Picture: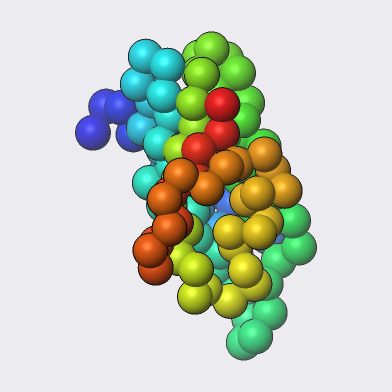
Length: 102
């Protein structure tokens, strides 16, 4: 897909996270945002923040008005609350939460 951007985060050459986004004229959708353990029960620090840095950097470069993503309520680490701290607002709530940042 020519509109798909994917970033792979690595810690000491070991993949620790991945994000895929699609960019429209004024809307960026986060398709996948995944943290990958680097060892048994061990995650790399700042993986999510680093991936979000690239999301926001691309959004700014493309003059994006809205960034959207979906998060599962039942996920460990309460991702919905983390995304709300980044400025996302809940748009709908079932077991998957649609979030929007404008």
